[in-house]
Structures are given as structure tokens and as C-alpha cells.
Amino acid sequence: MGRRSFAKRGIKVFFLFLLVIFGLSRIIGTKNLSRIESLERKLKGDSNNLNVILPLAESYYKKAIYLDDVKESFPYFEGAIFLYKRAFNINKDPKTAFLLGKAYFNIAKYLDKEEKSKFYKNAEENFLFSYHKGFVDKELFILLGHSYLINGFFDKSIEFYKKALLLAEKDPIVISNLAFCYKEKGCLDKALSYLKMIEKPLTKETFIDLHLSLGEIYERKGLLLLARKEYLIVLEKDKDNKKALRAIKRLD
Image (cartoon, rainbow, N blue to C red; front, side, top):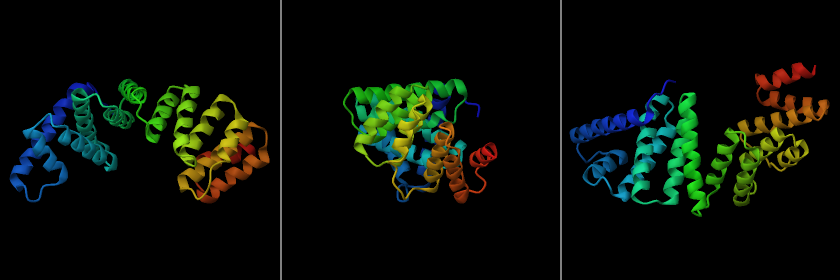
């Protein structure tokens, strides 16, 4: 998806977006206003009120996350970033920096390569600000782990995934990410030991990822019968899984 001059275009889109909403608000009156529309009206009256800016930014972010259409979600991401930046400029709060980092991180996946890299970097900088200011949150540590993982810094990823694991000892996503990092470093036994820590029941997606990872590790260790068994378990859940089908063909 082509996304050029995000900062300039984003601010313009954001203000146009607000103008449209304010226009609609005047038409329908205050009685039936949504939470977003109500907050937008309050923001228009007091643009520096953190008690309005932060809830509105959160509402935009949640709207962006849950919309299926990327084109529809984009203005809400832009609005969230704009407002979180404004809030952060008013009060350098580490939680606000974390929330701003989340917005940057989640919009990055929809951007072109050059802007994607820039936005992931912005996310990482905000996460690190929060961390160094003493903000403690499982999601912060996970996202810092993801940020380093994207750039191939496995040791730093492991450091922050372990911090997350201290706050959520049985979280299968954190454990899977730790295992992935060790697998990519070539520490197959360490990766295997983490994967065996994962407790069921799991979501279908996590279940499939777990057994694909087990299959890959066993295959790399030369334990081909065990690898085949794991790939077949995946196919029992998802008979069209391309990774498992390729692996079975490769082993045959």
C-alpha cells in the first residue's frame, strides 16, 4: 500500500476527519452522540485537556484495531498518533509514550518499506522511553521484544521476552517467541525446552504454530520421525497448511 509523506498527509487527513465528524455532530445533535463524537466536541472546546485527549486517542486506536478495512482504519490510527503525540508534548508521561509506541507499531505493518522502518523505529524509541522511566507492563516488554526481533537482535528480544514472562509465567505467545529466538540463534535444545513449557488448551493458531515449531526443530536435529509426527498433528487441525504439507513432502 502506497503511503507517502505520512506526517504531513496524516495531519491534514486528521483535521479533515475531525471537521467531517464535527459537521455530523451538529446535524444529529448531542442526544445521540457516540463516545468518539462526544469527545471530539469537547476537544474542539479545549484542545489541551488531557482528560479529553487521552480517552479520544484510545477510542481512535481501538476503532482502528477492530476495523477490518485498512483504508477505513488508517485515519483512526493517524488520529491516535496525533493525539498521543500532543498528550506526550504536554506531559512526558511514560504510559503515554508506551501508548504512542503501540500506535506507531501497529500502523507500521500497513506502510511501505521505508516508512515501515521509520515507524517501527519511532515505536521502539517510545517503548524505550517508557521502560527507562520505570514503566512496567507485560505488553511493553513483549513489544520491545518484537521490535528487536524485527531487526534481528535476538539477544535483546530474549531479554525483554524474559521480562514479560516474569509477569505472565504461562503466556504461550511469550514462550513461543522466546523459543523462536533461540531457534534462530541455533540453540535448538533451549528452544525445545521452552516449547515444552507451553500448556494446553491453546487457540487453533497457537496450537498450529507450536507444532510447526516443534517439527522444524526436530527436523533440524535430524529426528525426522518426530518431526513428521508434529507436521501430521498440524495437518489434523489444518489439512491445507502449506508449511506442514511442504515439510511432509520434503521428509518423504
